[in-house]
Length: 246
Image (cartoon, rainbow, N blue to C red; front, side, top):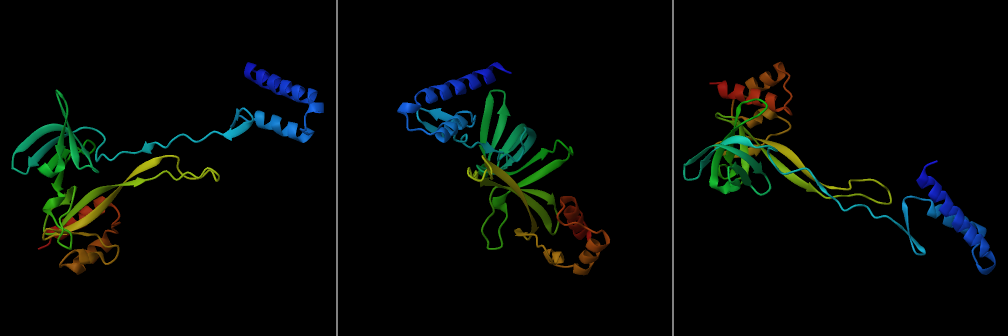
């Protein structure tokens, strides 16, 4: 038996003897004494004087981040005044639309509204990724976009995507012991078509309507190649095919 276990049992036995010795002067019954000992032996309970309280859960943390990339990537900026900033190690924060730039003297911040576009090299594919300021394109209602869109395919009809960050509050239910103890930052990617400088969400049905013409060819290409339009590489293949048509 461990030393801790021996101390716990000795303490419980001493409490029981003490209670038993004072039986004549106490109104406690045998069942009350038994209940007290059971509560004292429960490691999940905290004894404070005569009261017993459940330990509260730890305060929630925030799981996740709002960074488009979690590491510094070598980046070239085209600013609104047409000047270039080249070869800088950069992280981009989505929710505040701001860049962290690593310099020899420390981190420097660059506001997203000062940037027209930027290019960085993807560390996995080693290919350049191009991003454009959302202010340069418009919703269907004519209002400008926000943040930055990654340009997947260029052409008559482009394919662009944007990453959005959601905040999900902790929803742990103590009594039922279900839910999350922590807040979460959740990222979701949205794909859009870009035509005449207007971007639209991609439809789930009748996908050929994304394009202004060549509908029979688009339907045939999707069918023959068994495209899964939930996959980015299949979407890119379809848009590249359309833009190759005359």
